[in-house]
Length: 245
Ligand code: SF4
Image (cartoon, rainbow, N blue to C red; front, side, top):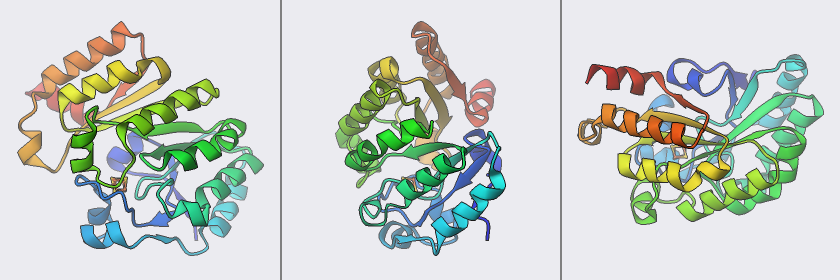
């Protein structure tokens, strides 16, 4: 069984290759797309987390086949590689070891436990893994409403700062933008220690989506990125939507 796959659609703008180590995610984000992708309920996905069966064994088999491939493997789209279960299972650490062993490229996308990320930083550095943190709110009270069990805003900022200092390539996924003012605040707060930004709009939640002036947000975000001389990528759906409205 292959566990490394080529993402399709919007996910392809994030990574050419990806691998999900866990099934389920306890962060419980209100905007989570994973339950719909996996044809399950929000409650189930956010309460029953399990390691994927033999995922490390299969990942190593894929790694052997991928030797020499320069595409970065993203951990993970459908779960978080640094959710609490990682404390016992250490699947992410084992996967990064394999990435290093076979000379592959990888990137992390997480809003998870700062202590676990910190413990793996030496391995990330050694394996040239890029560390991506999702950060869309500057106000931790609002963050709690939307991402109840994910890590606090300050922890995420701190992790980015430490990783950057340790020489790890840091990036922020500013997606899904829910509150444009807070998203702009995040850019202001983190631009000094973030090397790359990916920005995307909220989708599938019309009641919030329709309240945002996306063209104005895009203009403001790009002007901040230019001011800070930051590298960034605007996802197609945001660019196209902003042009039409
Ligand atoms: S971190 Fe990702 S997978 Fe986990 S609940 Fe939030 S959106 Fe879903």
